[in-house]
Image: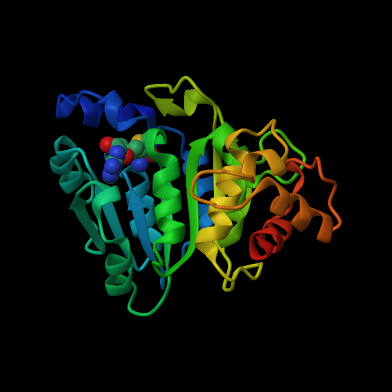
Amino acid sequence: MANLGIPRNTIEVLQKYNFTFQKKYGQNFLIDPNVLERVIGAAEVSGEDCVLEIGPGIGTMTQLLAERAGKVIAVEIDRNLIPILEETLSPYSNVTIINEDILKLDIKRLTEEAGGGRPAKVVANLPYYITTPIVMGLLEGGAPLRSITVMVQKEVAERMQAGPGTKEYGALSLAVQYYAQPEVVANVPPNCFIPRPNVGSAVIRLTKHTAPPVEAADVGKLFAVIRASFNQRRKTLANSLGNAPGLSVSREQVTQALEEMGLPAMVRGEALTLEQFAALSSRL
Ligand code: SAM
């Protein structure tokens, strides 16, 4: 089977099927064998693994995954890509193609059934327009997953990995880090894709924690506090949390809780660690 990571082969397949890229689906196909190798290498795919690939495109990465994994499930929304995938993946009996919107699928059930008790790995060059709902859905949805290794927009990777006191740090950093250990493994320039995206890209691996890194009596409340804290990030916590809709805490209660925790009354959300947010939300 021709290596689709080589631009000439990708173009040949696209021409054969007269395929037109759909911008609304975030279609930027990888055409760099080294980058493909980096993604799959970072995911440490082995023969026992069940891999969920989101958005296989014409099957470039899927072929490489099929050669190394025990099983691959590839979920693609664009029905025009299905006949192409049926051809490019025809040599592999361990690949299942699903023509669906990943945001509408029951990923928990799918991975439970396919993995046979072993947590699955997610590997993908994600459609950037829905990166956050996909990643948060994977983390929050309770599906048995070991890791998520994905190509995303560079700025989004930086936000996922950011720590307190940086301008990238925010609700996404804390949400991701509650569930997983993030690590950016490669930066990828636009010329590795066809068509070229107008943003830089990065590969990030999220290794799921086996247990949450902090104790939170009420996870829903922890995330409500985090979201409200970063809604207006220039405001102090006392101002952004006091009277935030849905939280029902007063400015005074926030100030008192911060004082009990030994934090300055004027502190902003961007200064607090995940542990401090957990402690604050338990006090409120
Ligand atoms: N994996 C291919 C590659 O690397 O060459 C394609 C990656 S491209 C960035 C994103 C892929 O996700 C496209 O094939 C697109 O059609 C698909 N896609 C977009 N939205 C989707 C959704 N909601 N559910 C499933 N697939 C989706």
